[in-house]
Amino acid sequence: MEAARRARGPQAPTGPFPMRTRPSGFTLLELAVVLIVLATIALVAAPQYVELADQNGTLAARAVASAIGNGTRDNAAARAARMPGTVTVEARNVCASTVLQPFAGGGVTLADPAPAAPSASTTHPFLVSGTGDCSGSALAALCTITAPGTGTATATVHCAR
Image (cartoon, rainbow, N blue to C red; front, side, top):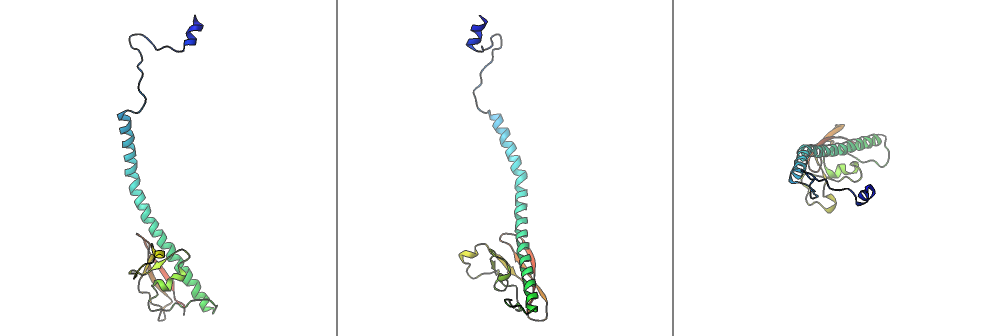
């Protein structure tokens, strides 16, 4: 008899409180709790994401400013040593994209604050502004680099005569 009972499988309990089977799926309360948790995570993460995006713009501007500073410094030293292939940096206003573009590094596009008509290759240029003067006896000038969106940095442009 015991063997016959095992062969039939488990039986639903009987008695004054039989087990009810519940339909599968999530209850409204469970869904509401999940939505509240996701909303809380979004409220905490969104401001940090915006701050991170602002920092990225500033870091990008600093990287371009550093590349310009290093490039013009190396160029000025090579020019002083009378090495071939150097560039003269002695304009009245060296804070122009045409002067600084060779020093910005590959993949970086510079533009002046009010470009006449940006081409397809200058969709997200770094803006160059300032009135750095290398026409006199100055050894260096300061220019402002503005990243696309937000973020600025100061580039030290080394004059080369």
